[in-house]
Image (tube, rainbow, N blue to C red; front, side, top):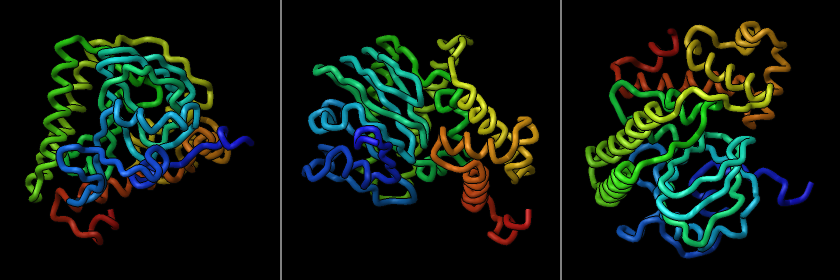
Amino acid sequence: MNTSDKIKEINTIQEFKQFYLQDAQYSYCTECNHLEYSHGEGFLEIIALEDLQKLHTRHIGRQSRRKFYSIILLSEGEVEEVIGHQKYHFGPQSMYFVSENQLHSIQSWSEDLKGILCMFDADYFLLCLKHQIKLNQFPFFQLDKVPYIDLSERETQMMQHLFWKLNSEKCQKSTFNDDLLVRMFLNIILLEAERIYNHKVVEQSFNLSRKEQLVAQFQLLVNQHFLEKKQVNEYAGILCVHPHYLNDMVKEVSGFSASYFIQKQLIQEAKSRLMQTNQTVSMIATD
C-alpha cells in the first residue's frame, strides 16, 4: 500500500495540528493567539479556511478519519472533498459537515477560498444544554443523509456572525459560565443549520453501498435502543445478519467495532446523567 493510500487516524486536536500544520508556529485564533482549549472537558477549535490552506496542500488526496465533528462554512471559492465514499463539489454560500469517525479527504481547494472550519468533540458538546441534544440526531451527521446545505446570502451572513460570536466568546472566556456560553453558541449554530437543512433538503435518493446502508441502519438502531439492547447480536438479529458479519462491516466503514458504538452511547448517557442529575456512578451502573 502506498503512503498516500493509508488512512491517517486523527484522534485529537494535537494530531490535527501535527498532520496539517506540522512544525509551523501557527495559531487558530489571531485574537487570543491560543491553540489549546483549557477550560472544561473536550475541545473546540475554529480556523479560517484561507489560513489552513496555506499549509495543507501537502495533504491533498490523503484520507483521514477524525475522531471529532467538523462544520465548514464556505463563503467564497470552491472545494472538492470526499466524505465517506461520496465525492462532493461545494461552492460559495454552502455549509457542509463531517461526522465523527467518517473517512474524509480533500481533493482540491481553489485559491480564492474563504470560510470557517469549526471542530469539536462529543465531550465538548455534552454541556450545551441541560437536556442534551444528541449530536447524532442532527440529520447532516447521519450516514444516510446528505451532509451539506446551500445557503442564501442572508443565511451565509447570519452563520458568519454566529461563528464570529462563537470565536469571540471562546477567546474571552475566563469562567465556567463563560464556557457554558461558548457551548450554547455552538448549539445555536447547529440548531440553525438543522432548521435550514430541514427546510431546504427534500427527501431524495442518497446512494450508499449496501455495507454503508447496513452500518447506517445499525447506528440508527443503537441510537434508539442502546439503553435496553447492549449486545451486538441483538442488533444483528434485527438486521437479519450474522453478528460477525455486522461487526466486520461496521469496522470496515467506521474503523471501529460494532460494540464500540454501543459502549460509546452508554458512556455518553452516563456522562450526561452525572452532569445533569443527582445520580451517583453506582446508581447509573445498576440501571
